Image (tube, rainbow, N blue to C red):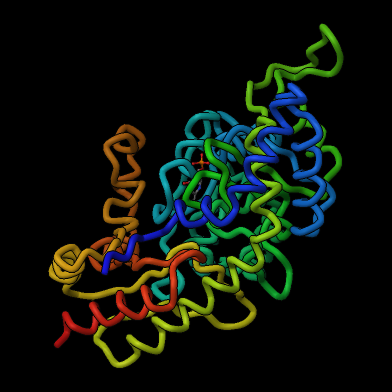
Length: 366
Ligand SMILES: Cc1ncc(COP(=O)(O)O)c(C=O)c1O
């Protein structure tokens, strides 16, 4: 049996009639930029996350850049984040001219270790970017408490964690602002690029709205230098259809994760840990094995999809060398890079497929 890492074709087949109708409506209106679909998505997303403002932008990467710019972070500023993330988190800090400072992660949930924050703070530190890795919320109480003590901004990177909760509240509403990606593999995904910034700060929201659209205030008037980063109406129409399925999809991911948890419990692999107050949304189901490469080969032979995020962590990428990020001492991150492995998980995969993938992992260990 083939088990893909995710099944976007099955999702499309299930939603096709609504999708076609929504896209046709958007195209027939020919209102293609910042129109009613974007407005509807922004209103729904603000309500679901529990914030005053949700502002659609061109991608998750743009959302990070615009959030940093809106907080006036730039040259001479330092921003603390982790190396265990997609490169965009670090890239955005560099692109606004600031300096990324990296701290290590916790070995259990792969998120920023708040215990390491204080020693990384300098007089130049302006902001923290915790990443809710794989859909597991970072320890926001501890992170916010450090941020408050040192008057630092907090930008939550929620690109992998749509509607993950911490102390019962959705991520994206726990810091100064949150950023989301709607890239095709995400728990809420479009059929192209898209992103969102969430905040309850009115002034920040106004600045973000200006930045996403060339500083545009009214016809022929541009108040500040900004970006071309408008979420398009077709993506928003698609996202509005998928939004209605997000809670169901997250619940289904948790159910499929529970199948793995049980099937792999007695094997020499670490399965994901999650404990209150965190509520995981299993963007990825990550296990760890000291014999990762042989296990990967076994999955490949048996036609089971897998990924190894982050085999090469962001800070060790060639792009980051000129900034000296490879010199950061991140032993937990580097050990995880050698051991982690993601197994198939997606709302449109069947229980049978997940059981078969788990059985294949069991088969490896005899
Ligand atoms: C943690 C993290 N941050 C930021 C991004 C960037 O999002 P996008 O691909 O929409 O630009 C991603 C996307 O892969 C991500 O996983």
